[in-house]
Length: 107
Image (cartoon, rainbow, N blue to C red; front, side, top):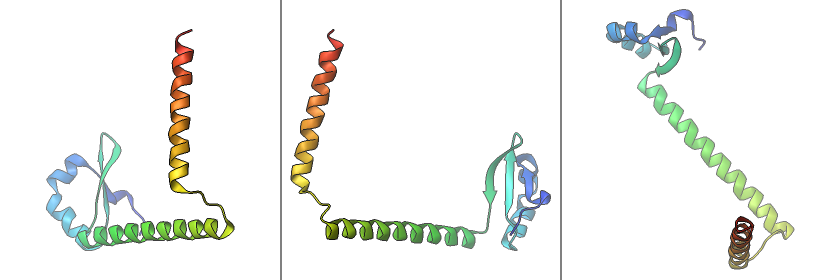
């Protein structure tokens, strides 16, 4: 649904007409409320907000499935390392970087 100019309302006007705005939103119209001429908040139906939240959760699940698929492809291709060895190497590198920085600062 496209927004029209009448769907963009200053905050002062929204305060004065909240009941009417709520009725319009419940009927399916979304409103953008502005403050100091800038977009501030949106007024949408609660059921539609629930729907948006469900979509976001589904998107997150799809992203996780994509990560799993890439991980399995890495395992199949042999692009794996032992986690303990990788963490130990990371810790050694971190210590080496810290030591190098301390040595640089003393000069």
